[in-house]
Image 1: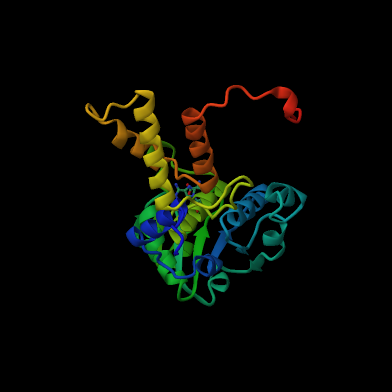
Image 2: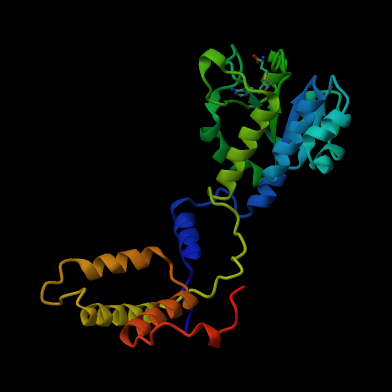
Length: 280
Ligand code: SAH
């Protein structure tokens, strides 16, 4: 007999129907995203960017004319994303960092004259991912103090802003990288957390017929105890169905519930402690 899909699978299938992935292979699309940091001054920000990237499955860091060394401060802030730092490509120019890319997006809080058209991050991300399905896509970030130079901005096909408070619009560089990496990952994976392994105590999901038998048993017991009067049912049974429906019952849990109902139908009285092994 085919197994009933667990609720998590239902959720995933339903979600993917409602939100088709922009790419068939989200990990591969994220792998084609280059984070390009222009003229970065603080090694801590390079490290923070590497950490922000790795937490979201991005790995390709480019440093254009860095004004700082990738030193122990950078490594400390990378907090384990040393591999991203070690693989960082240092370039003499933005043009060099963009070689081979099919698209570049400039990250800028401020709209610029003659710059490319600007969009908000969430608006921009789906098309960035679609392009990343076809080739490398660059996210270009500016210097901590001066931001991106106009010439750097004009090398990009679009400008992307993190919609912050206009009275205090500028994020820390590492934080800006984190927001972009997060939004890309959420869009790539349809906003779902990765599948987590089942807890050690979880058993297989109960089948619908096992659940049905449990409800029949419950009704029998509730009638026998007088809690439920079939002549005046009110809405007790549908409410109980809704309650247990939310619980995504497993086989073990059905067994426990059926055991409890058995014990109500045929009480044995308190168990004699001496006959049992001591509690741990
Ligand atoms: N003082 C600079 C900002 C530097 S912040 C300025 O006014 O431009 C360093 C970089 O982080 C910026 O160049 C940009 O690439 C990115 N960044 C920070 N805040 C941002 C925001 N709200 N939207 C888009 N990018 C942002």
